[in-house]
Image 1 (cartoon, rainbow over the protein chains, first blue to last red):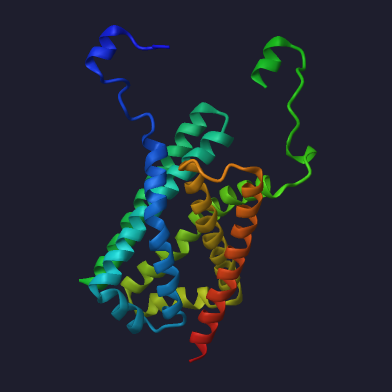
Image 2: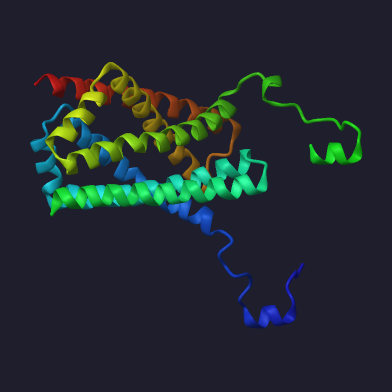
Length: 124
Length: 135
């Protein structure tokens, strides 16, 4: 059954094509986080109880610093998408829901920025 | 509930969580969301640790002091399991997204595999971590 108008078929544009954006970015960051999370646990095991000098020297190397920045971006992006769904599910009041999502997203953005800054300060 | 108030009569509700006997499928689904929320909170400790390291040795020492206290280690143990569970079950989710593993038998098998893998990886990580700490 054809559900689209003739004009819509001719233009071939369909929807605005961002209906699955949230879903897709959640999967994309999830796939990215598989190796990143394994690297993270593996690396931190080497830093357990380490001195400040040892941790600073570790993040002063390009590779750990770059991967840590990637981890921070992917983690907070993924967390923001996931927490958004949690808030949407449990906060019934529309105004409160809007505020909660806004605060949560800004917090994720701020935390990601703090992480990236901290890593760059140690690395550069 | 808004509908109930509007119509002025109580309508039948679908059975809620406590009605059901816990099954691995539902328990793992709830755990996936729970560990996701827990890990979001856990990022606060990571951010604190990294910002403290960037601030200097004194700030780093106080962050490290909290993390290596019994309470910090307890949190770390919980977050280790949460991370491995969310990781393993997340991979399970990605297989479903690709259209695989929808047989009932496969649901149960992959569920128990996730429990075993996340438990095993947590124990393994802590053995390696504690052994490395001693040296």
